[in-house]
Image (cartoon, rainbow, N blue to C red; front, side):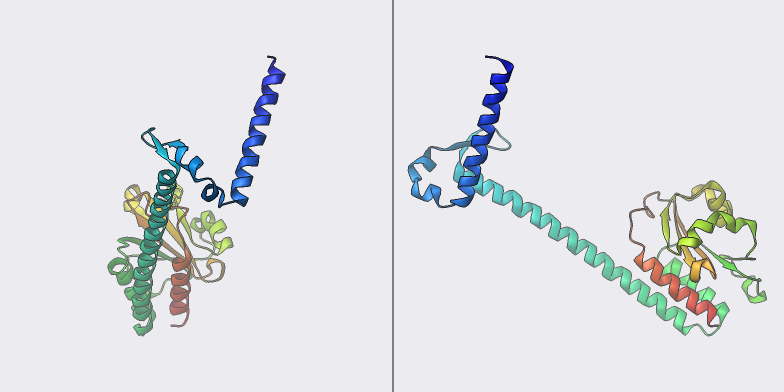
Amino acid sequence: MTTRDARGLATTAESEEESVARYLQHNPDFFERHQALLAHLRLPHARTGATISLVERQVEVLRERHAGVEQKLAEFVRVARANDALAEKVHRFTRRLLRARSRAEVLEQLEASLREDFDAFHSTLVLIGTPAPDEADQHFVRTVRADDPCLRSFETLFASGKPRCGQVRDSQREMLFGAEAPTIGSVALVPLGDKGSVGLLALGSPDRDRFHPGMSTEFLARMAELIADALTSR
């Protein structure tokens, strides 16, 4: 037999299998009309390799599908609960900012909420403008002028106007977190105001996976709007 003949036989076999598969799809009652054939069909077990009946194989497939559906449902429930918990934290965060009567209180409540509600123990707020006397004691606030060279490395972030999570340059990490920079494994950068006109909020974590590029930034964007509105209205 030549190679061409062998290829021809393989092609014919594949064609016949496809025809059989199509026929069974269009005639689901085939085995009801040929029950004797059904009793003689044996299939290898997916895990053990032992032969089982077609009915047993169907039950096994259904169990596997059911298990897959259960896993997906459990994941949906987990994500929903996590989102509910996060929404509750943002709600408390919003109320803190609404109760603040001055800009100084906004900064105080902002830092407290990040630490107490979100476990963000490494946070820095970079504001663009002229430092105010009552902001001098806010240890996590740094005010810089719009033309400060340290802002140049954040131009891409400001241009996008969207939060970004993941790794940052060493120079950016040092500028944001100072002496704590070597302990920071991942960072969330949140521009405040239109194109970062108000400033930048940076959240750091020793965990390299806490703030990763694939995570959703929807809640961070909402928090950015709340912070910018609270700072510019007082």
